[in-house]
Each structure stands twice: as C-alpha cells, then as structure tokens.
Image (cartoon, rainbow, N blue to C red; front, side, top):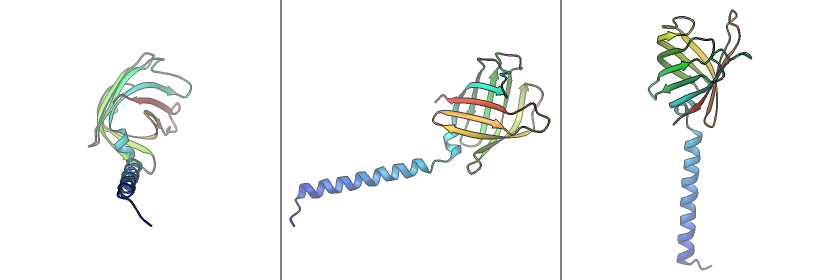
Length: 150
C-alpha cells in the first residue's frame, strides 16, 4: 500500500487536532467549582420561602477572588435592610457547598461579624443559586440567585 506525503501530513494534522481537543475537554471537566465561582456576580433575587424581603428588584454585587476572599453588598428594594459584608470563603466541591466566614458586616438584621454560614450551591452556566440549610428557629430557606457579571 502506497501512502502519499499529502495523506501522511493530513493524518498527522488530524491526530494533533484530536489530541488538542481531548486535552481541552479534559481541562474544562477538571475545573473546580471554586475556580468557576471566582469573579464578579450581580444579584438577581433573594427569596425567603415564597416572600421577597429585599423586594422585586434588589441590587447587589458579590466579588469572590481565587485566594478565598469575598465581599457582598445587597441594596434592598423591599422591607429588609440593605446589608454588606466581607470575609473569607471555602468551597467543598463534593458537597457543592460554600462556607462563608464573615469578618465584618453592616446592616441586615444584626451584626454577623465572626459568624460562619454554609450555603448549598447550584451553578448552571452563568447563574448561581445559593441556599442555606434553615436552622430550626429560622422562618425558612433563603434562596439567593446571582448572575455572572464578568
């Protein structure tokens, strides 16, 4: 069987293309949840059960950096007080959760400085839904929906 130089080059280029494509797919599959969360997020909504304590059109920003620092500000359009806080966060890929440790806060329903919160995460495309596990004395599950701004 005779193989032409053109056929050999075409086959080699096809093989290189397949290797590069499979490498890119493997890298995107290996991207951790934390890496996908890093960046700037804009608030879409906050719900407490079927209520919207921050109103129909709350505004807010959340910044998460790769070193585990965060800052959040939520401006209320409803009855709840606006809130801002900053601190650190860790992500548990297996549990699809984030634990936030608040270093400083202002507004809201009280000072949350020094407290930690665990949030369950659902990330689909550029939308992030964060929910808490409601404690026994809480009025319900808080659901925050964010969209990626960057």
